[in-house]
Image (cartoon, rainbow, N blue to C red; front, side, top):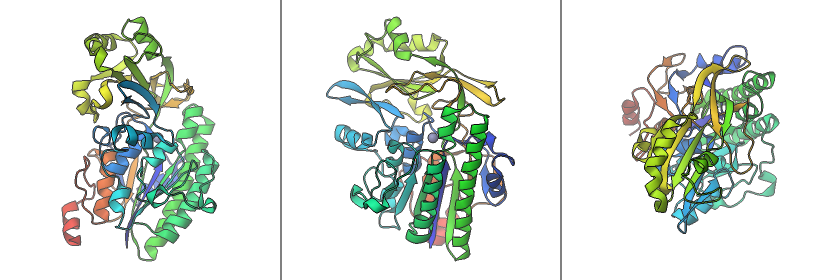
Length: 430
Ligand SMILES: [Zn+2]
């Protein structure tokens, strides 16, 4: 039977893979094809990437615009934390749909099914299957088809840390790889991302987290090899969703806009900023649309912006002006090193919802070089072991690649299958 296994080590930067810290990934590169120019989406945030991996589409199409984003509700711009367990259910009530395009879980219902084990935020976990077509296991609640909760004895009771990742991995191997055997199994671990947010990149804690994540990947690789030896044709995809930059400053964008006379007050809904770590989404109510030119000038001149993308250019970064999104901002980033010699710094937009600002530690969300550089290695038919592909690959290519392996159509996706000679492989299966 043909199956696909996707393992995501959240937040692991491509340039941090080395024989000392991640020996198992280095060894896997000898058996897999490595992608030297793998790119993530904007914002480079877990929930958004989760939706893009699940749908094969950029945010412009799936409409999960950010880790935090705004919905127009009864004529009012309302800011939301998309990490909350109920966000996509709420979005469905407001807009008529959770994600605007089908997920792999939906496409695979009736074709072997999908099972997701995730130890990141609830919003990111449920973005893989917001409408209950497959099975999703997460500490905030695990669901089977129809979003019916799995029995209490089967719930995933883990913490969002390295121990939790270990327990999640072991259950994934036992239940998904060995017992259930769905067409698609997704294991999404919270580290090294979780540790990088709380400790400087390059610190001892950071190196330990990398090495633990590397060990988890090894456990899955070994289990996949056993299944392959038993005759299964498994596509194994191991990668990350984004990297990190070191936070060197925190900008309160809403306060800045109030001071500049471009937003009325702290709680006004004329202009609403959704912080996405090292980026921000700026929404303008139609009643305040006459401010957009001045806002654009202000953002272009501000010393804290890196790249400012106005509404008519959002397609260039895979976004669209849904929900009155007027500007996307990638905060000012640099190639400088932190105290441990790890390259890449960035300013961040002051987080809402009382979240910590991560000063001196890692953050992501923008278009900085390192946060935009996740890693990707694939082993299985259509990929050349030990080779490195230099042409660009994108997170939206993962879903069509999985469907190509399963001999299923990937119609309506932004990405394209990464298999070499994908057309010949499809023709053989037809
Ligand atoms: Zn992430």
